[in-house]
Image (cartoon, rainbow, N blue to C red; front, side):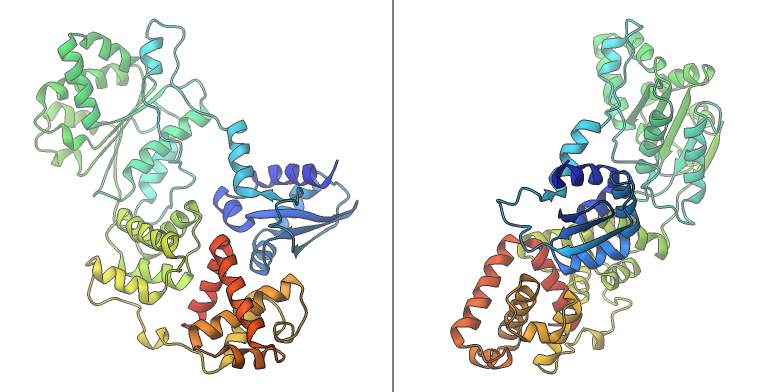
Length: 474
C-alpha cells in the first residue's frame, strides 16, 4: 500500500479519536514524507502546525498509525516544503478529507413508522438538529442540574423525570439541552421516534389542522411518537384552544409512558396566562432552571464555539471577553461572529485593543474589566526584537533567519522578518539588506513582494504572522 492510502487510513482512525474541530484546525494539510516498518515521518504545513500537533496530538497520531503499522515505534513531524505543490499527489487536504469521510459515515436520524398508516405523516415530522448534543454542551455550576436531568432522561425515556421542565432566560442553552437530549435518545434507542418543535410552530400546525378539520390526524400524529420536545411554551399564552389540544396530547403521551420535555422562560407556576390544569401537568415531573453562566463556563463556551467555527482565538482575548460579556451565550457568540467576520474580511486576528473597542461600540460596558492599557503598548525596541519573535514562533535559530540558507524552513521566517521590518518599523530596503547578510535593495524588495503574494493565498501563514504581531504589539 502506498503512502497516500496508508495516510488516508491513518486519518480515518484519527478522526475517531479527536474532536472534529481540532482535526480541522490543527492538521489542515498533511503528507507522509518517509515510512518504514517502525517509523513514519509526517509532513505538515509549517513549524507552527508541527509544534501544535506534537504538543497536543502526538499520542493520538501514534496510536492511529499503529493501527496500520503494528510494529511502529516512533513518529516524527517535519515541515513539507512541497505540501502546496499541486503536482504533489501524496498530500491530503484534511478539510476535504473530513467532508468526504462524513458523506460516507454520516447518520441522519429520520422519523419513520412504516408499520402504521401514519407513515407518510411521520416522515414529514421535523427531527432534532444534529449539531446539538449533550457531549458538546458546556457544563457549569449554573446548569449542572439541568444537564444531569437531561442525561437521566436520555438513559430512561418515559421513566425518569417525566415530564422534564427546564426554564431560564433567553440565550442560556435551553434549546441546546432539549435538542441534545433528543439526539442522545436517538443515538441510544435507534427505534425511538423523537419530535422537537417550538410552541410557535405547534400553534401554527394546530391552526392549520383546525382549518382542514383534521384535528384527529394531528392528535394521532403526536401520539405515534415516543418523545415530545416543546421549546418556549410561554408563547402559548392566551392561546386557549391550542393549550387545550396540548393538554389532550400531553395526557395521551403521559398515560402511554412516552417522554415529554418542555422549556420555558419561567417556572410553570409563573406562566400566568396558561391554564392551571396545563401548568399542573408541567409540574408532574421535575422542574430545573438554568442560570447565567459563571466566568469559567463562559470562557469554556467561547473556546468551544471558536473550535466549532475552526477559529483560533488568543487566550488573553478569550479571557477578556469572558470577563466582560456576562449575560448569556448568544452575546458571546455575537462577539465571536464579529471577530470571525473581521478575520475573513481583512485577515487580522483579534487583539485586546480591537476587542475592547468592539465591546464598547456594542455597549457592553464603558468600564471594561481586565484591560491593562500598559500591556497593549508595543514591546519592540529594535530590529532584533522582531527577529527574536519570528525565531521563537517558527522554532528556527536566529542565525538561520539572518543567513543565506535557501531552504523553505528558513526562507519563510526570513521573508516574514523583512516584511515586518519594512511595514511595521519603516526600515528602508537598504537597511534591511544590511541586517540580512548584506542583501541588496532588489533582493529585499523581491522577498517582501513574494511574501505578500503568498499571504493572499495562504490564510494559515497570514494567521501566523498576525499572531507574531499580536505578541509584540505591532
